[in-house]
Every structure is written in structure tokens, then in C-alpha cells.
Length: 183
Image 1 (cartoon, rainbow, N blue to C red):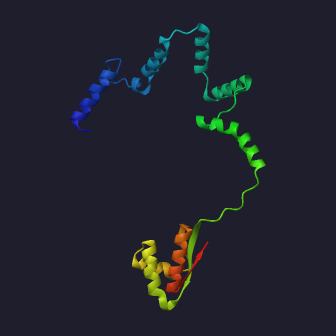
Image 2: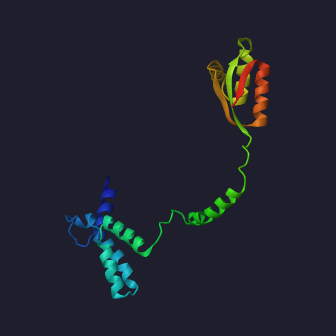
Image 3: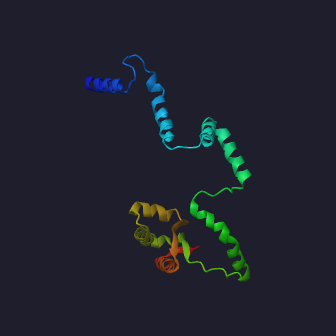
């Protein structure tokens, strides 16, 4: 530590210490002044002696004792456990109405699949260069990566592709001599 930094640290420490002794380090280890300030900050509001007695007793409890206190208060006062987030509390109340509506309606037919996964399964050896170029354009890979990709077939090309785009890609690859499957 440089000399100006040491000087600044010492002068700062002097201003924080309650005594003028340089060797007493306990005020830095014990945070009594902030605890007293925090405790005294709640004394500004006048409260009844009964409530202040309860607050004093609760503040002396351990974490486990506090958890037991909370659970026993919930059970005695019939307070339900609320989910985290205030907006989620309204969802359970609406759930029975939604369930009743769903029971009246017939089950909808299976929805048609709109997103597909394209998988390169095979290719003609004579059309390898054309397939590599097309894979390079489709996937945005480098030429070397495209070559490794094509040679490691069968391999997934794209995922979550809309139906129209997937059909175009399959048709293009078929013309070039590659076999692409839509899953």
C-alpha cells in the first residue's frame, strides 16, 4: 500500500473509531453502532407496550423459531400459503370454471404439425460438390464445415422450420441428388 493510501486509511479509521487509541480494532469487528441506529430508528413511531413487547420477543428468536412461529400463525389464523408472485393467486380461482367449460366441449382434433426438423440422410457421390455448396448456403457454414457436415450424414440440418420452407429445401436438395427427410 502506498504512503498516501495508508495515510487516508488511518485518517478514515480515526474518524470512525469511538476512542482515540490506534490499537483498538474491536469497533471494526463489531457493528454495534449500526445495530443501535437501526434499532433506534424504529423507536420514532409510538406503539403500545403490548406490541413493543411482542416485537422484542420476536427479534430475539432464531431463524428456526421464527419459521415455526410463522407456520403456527398460518395454521391458527387459517392463512393459506400464497404462491410467489401476486398475479398467480387469481389463477386457481379461475381453474374450476375453465375445467367445467373444457368438459362440455369435445376434444379438438390433433393439430397439424407446422414446424419440422430437416435431416440429411444420404447424397449421391457424383453430386457431392453441389450438395456441399447448397448446405453452405442454407446453414451459413464455411466450405470446410459444410464438407464435414455432408460427409457425416445422416445429420440434422435445421430444426423448427415452417412447412413451406421445409418443402422447398427438400425439393432443392432432391434435385441436387441428396435425400432430406422432414420429421
